[in-house]
Length: 433
Image (cartoon, rainbow, N blue to C red; front, side, top):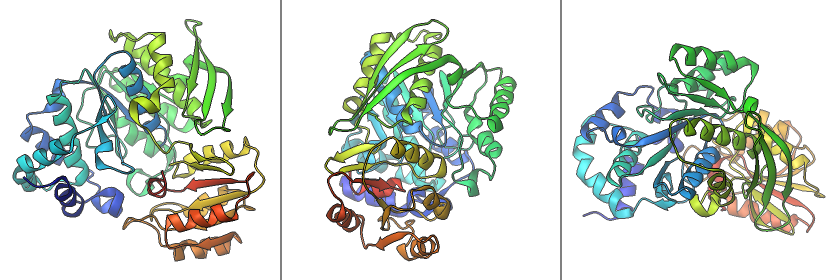
């Protein structure tokens, strides 16, 4: 039998992989996944699921939902992407990554059959996850889409509820260049007679979701209509930050006391989405109570090992990493930065090639010090391309050969009351957390 390292090398080097090469790896078609699942005797039909799409927030939302199910005693599968450090982060049960030997044996067993189908890396991985969840007899699987929704490889499940966190501009070359077009793709996860929760409502997309749910005879719930954030406070002064808030259920008048180590202000929107999802799940006889929900929020990192969401790496100076990587996500980061007291801002940033880098750089405080590096993947944007944009914007910047060198320089220049932010790409964050 091959080693895990050899198996990963096969998956990474032989198969088109979106996070490495970009849209050349994207299959706008479900036929390969259908063929793979047929080879596996359709494992997705053997477990209950929750399906989650959205431009931003779907990772945090998925992990929070999984954490709450775990607190309630459910054997909970979680499928997310991309990974930060280890491929196996994508596929977990109750917070534990899929074993290396399962990955190796799965690839060995199905390599010949799958090569006839010529799938992408993501299609292979979906097959692996669904097969693992079936064989381990999970009670529920929380499934995050990779890209879009309608044509995403995960979109062959029949979930108890579909969840769409929000809509913003990202992957416009693949999903469309208007919010309405992007919403149409995400709305593709809405299934017949299956309720759908919309996390964040905006004027341009509300009708898209309403029309799709009407067509599918699916009840639709807008989370911000159902839950209200009463008040909140954030503590960023320790290595383990915390956001505390009260959330009012407008229908039942019940108040939940939420304490959560996902301390970014943008998480408040995800909190409402998660709470509304469980209100819907209660109607299909999912047994979750208030205690499970509050504990699920509080223990989300312990239960799921989620990283890279306003993650505080050190204090004095405050060093924070966040995987926000598009305009919609960076807007939330700018809002967060505006709530924190610091003397000078140091930004360690890098990007992949399909991002609107000039728009994103324009969003950050222009008096910050910028430290640019290329994420260590083929799709990473060369720092010399960023140099041209940064010079045009008159930014105070330096270029570095690696993310670690950029961070080292930022730390050397920062005073105790400064703030160092690391981001721009999931793959920049992956190199430091």
